[in-house]
Amino acid sequence: MEEFYQAIEEAIRNTGYNGPANGQEIYDEICDEIEDREPGAYVFMSKKTEEIFFEYKIQIFEDQFNLSAIDIHSPDKVYHADLD
Picture 1: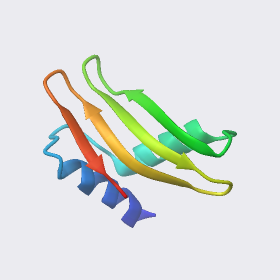
Picture 2: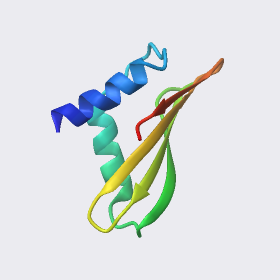
Picture 3: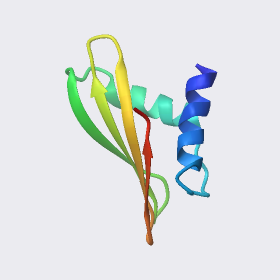
Picture 4: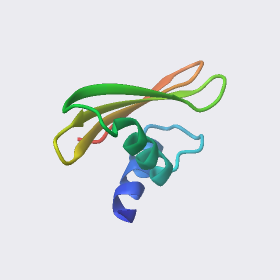
């Protein structure tokens, strides 16, 4: 799992976003959100500060999920991390 967490963090860093991003926290947050959800495509948003929120694009399957992208919305820019 550590490799997956690091891949999330690296993808976010590669966007140029300088703020904090913890792969394990993101993964855990997504797992909490998708619990008991039907399979399908979802967009989840997570407010990190008054000015910053993360938008997760997720495909949920019967026994797993695919995090395809993260958009980080800041007051002056949207940072896009493609994870597919």
